[in-house]
Length: 65
Image 1: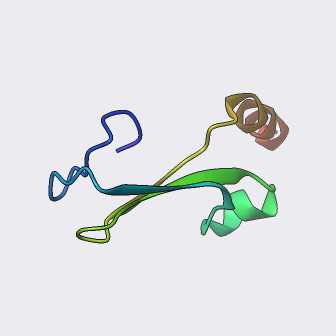
Image 2: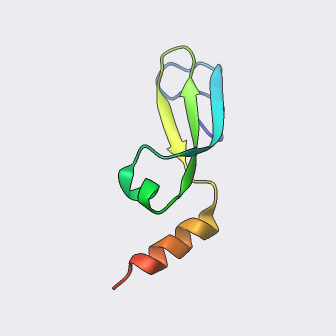
């Protein structure tokens, strides 16, 4: 969805992009990781993508024992 601009469920190109939303994932939310949401306006399918990979990598390193 993010790269192809196409819904993998219904093949619609009518995709809504909501940047910088906090993830519905409570673990990601507790780390203040913002995700961009992609929502198909035809069928409602949605995906979340974490665009700030540096912040994601930093969070990953902090989680290691």
